[in-house]
Amino acid sequence: MSTVNPTITTLHHLLDYDASKFTSAEIQLSKSLPEWINKTGSLKLKTVLQKYLDFVTQHIQSMEIFFEEENINSLSVNNRVMQAFIEEADDKLSNCIDAEVKDACLLSCIQAINHFKISTYGTAAAFANALGMQKQAAIFYAAEVTEKQIDDRLTQLAEFEVNKNARTPVALPA
Image 1 (cartoon, rainbow, N blue to C red):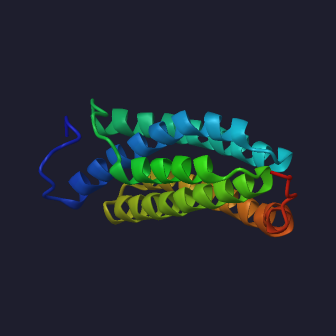
Image 2 (cartoon, helix red, strand yellow):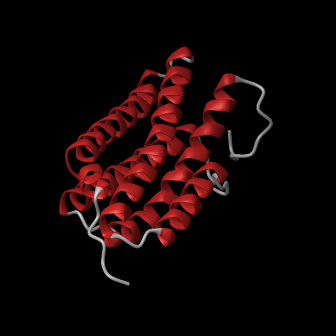
């Protein structure tokens, strides 16, 4: 398969198309995460998001190997779903004036993105397994696992720090 916008007539074509779309999503996310990390007040959240950025970079590199093996030579697709997640996060963050509430907002936006990515990588792993592509399935499964690990870290951070701090932000006089 030589392009990423073919007619989808087989499960293999669908896998290649989906992989192109969510690789685009990872690239889009990798451009937004550094700015979001800078907006974070919680040192623990900042650390988890930096680790997440490292995982995103690893996912992009893994997908480049997949594309080489699949002979896909173009990443000219845009992921509208990820773009919507990013725009929604930026919009929400622009309306948060308290640092603790901003952290809770950002964490919730990242988890929404994270859940989308768990689904896409899990589906890709299932498609690859159905096609007998165990090596490729392992790439997608590994990405799904790292997404779940980040999700677990974010959930714990939300429950034990970020949401508690956002619940009663310090009110500054106007």
